[in-house]
Image 1: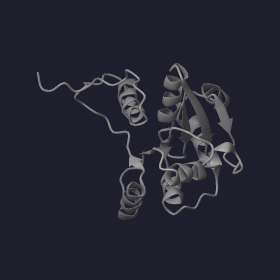
Image 2: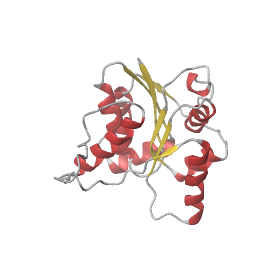
Image 3: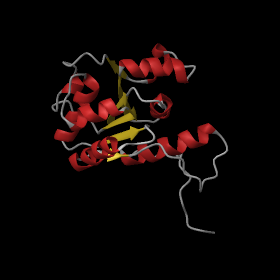
Image 4: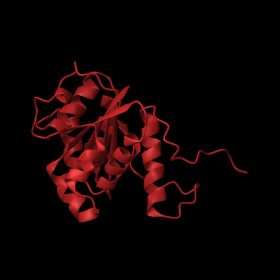
Length: 188
């Protein structure tokens, strides 16, 4: 059984985290552990029709972001990685500087120190030099930077098509094939 931590940070784009949870809920042999920042809960209300409790029911286990003593805060709690969707610049900064003052950034720090996959989906734009520097530093620490950018070769027709492609590509990074990605097969 794969154990995947889903962090939903305070950046715009919380729907990516919700969609990942929806897909993994229906994926056999995957257990999800959810931690949401306070700001993500605000963005959930602003950006979607989802409520917090319905999102929480998509995960197998839920944690309060203030619970720094939770299982996710220890490297002895084995997981198969963490995805932060969407990753705010504040969370990114905390991760890069090892300033783990909440469970979201502590769980990310644990993934880095234990050399487990940490996939960050930053959704900020445009980026200034400081943001770019943080992304570079996160990648040097071992994080995979996977901004949710639309692929156009698959000719998306809806917002869901765009979201699903990014979600599928991120799940690829933790070894889960979701059938959401139209695989490139070369120019026909």
